Length: 157
Image (cartoon, rainbow, N blue to C red; front, side, top):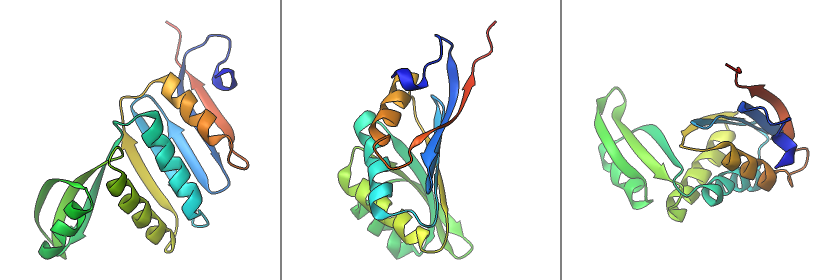
């Protein structure tokens, strides 16, 4: 925990990562960047870490697909939020609950497939805390090159 504290000042934002992964963390949102050389193991380690630290992690994703593909995602434990006709098929919004291992595995597979085309960016909204961010850092610091790259502090009033 001492790794990201600084003389009792309140931290509002932390960036951490290594060569092929970057996390920008606040208590309300985590932005994830996976470089195109990201590995299955590194993607899995980061997302499963989130699941262990806070089982309420949920990612909202939008997918354009044919109508008959909608149940495919539901069968993989994605929670259907809404859908509507759109150019190219149906625009479908799902929630991916990290507490559902099947949904998390399917999400990890989709990221790995997207990495074949280039880098991947995801934003996850959560009700986290600095303590949870510290836990994430401490779990991931075993990855080669993992460190904190930036800290921002709250303005003192």
